[in-house]
Image (cartoon, rainbow, N blue to C red; front, side):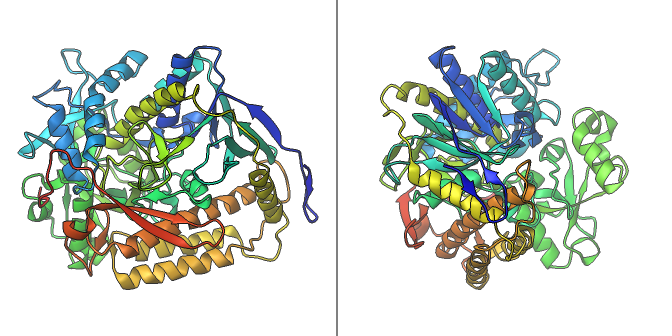
Length: 597
């Protein structure tokens, strides 16, 4: 099928690729899943990894401080302590059976990663070195413990390179610079998946990738906010695509703001800086976290520290009366800053023109991590509803998924652990399921829909530029659905997002070319951002309590009686009507109690 756009180029016919399994996203979750698929199925298996980036540019590479496991290499530690910290850190919205799997599997997973070649920092005895991180404690909350395994402050980069090299070694097939636009679901929402449709960025040609099994490992959607640590590519593609097809998203109201983003820039200064001994100070030079978290202080959980910064600013103790505070690492010295934290020290020198050895560093909370996403079980299988019905052939892992091991607030270093443990488990489950899944079928309706969408965008001349709407969306989400929320703010956000979606139905795409048309990809990504924002605001407006990353000033208390449950938000593909449903949190050992640090 060939389409000719109004005055634009001819879109070549769709090409079809037949594969055993498709992995969308080449970050840590996708690469580990692909590696396990290849190892379990053997060299004859055709495993394709589709990424809109070259794999080594995936956002896993930006993770700095470490990946946690209760190895006990530098002091006593136990996986049960890690399990408790994860549940408590998630403000008791964590499914405890899933968190138990993650914390148990963490030890084997890290050792396996070491055997794959990851160059961890070492203790003098040659063991994997470990450092402190926020919210990680000994003996169920008595004080900080060293649990984060690290490779200087480039841990994510080391993980990404290690897994990519192993995938190359095992002859995984890569389709770099392809943007996935839709799922092949011949029988509709909840029916078996038959692959995906993707746009080749180099040619604007549409390709169908048919496979029995598809895993989404596409990351988050931080670019929906004005100030974020996320890369430009994190636009919620993997969440918006199933949402458009009528499948649910889970716990989208919970978005984590990391306390130490570089002021106005959003670049992350990892918790590792505080793990090594850095601390926050206000305009008076006070270490204010002692007021809010007397035991853990600057290493309390991220939502607690971010809200504490906002309270300091609101009460007039921001630096010079402005909306930021200082991070003080001067006392750490060159041995720590330049050897253990070289990237972050370099960021401070390059982007601020400051020397962390002698200067205070301006920081503010930055949108960082989505706790919600595609609902899955502990083996990465996507769920079609609150009753746990599985979507045959659809899997998800990493930030795009919600297992839920992060609950209402992710514990630092659990993100890298999540992609490793559940990327690996999903790959193994996909390999085991392939023999039982139906053969992939064509989905002419999805293919025609995508071709029509791309054709319409390329012929658009009268609408607004995508960047204008994206900027307004980011302002709205940051100011009205950010660290603090109210019914009034969220209602304004809901109405604003609906208005922006209406305006985005007609977009102006000036570039008519086929080769790396960034005008076109900006328009496509704007659609994903708007859908992700819609799901987030709808879920947040309904939840009338404060829990973890969802802080309602009009409902300041956690309400376990009414809200100890997960939100499932979905949208009808036919009517566009949004529906909310709920399922209970899985509690196995740790009964909810007040969360103090």
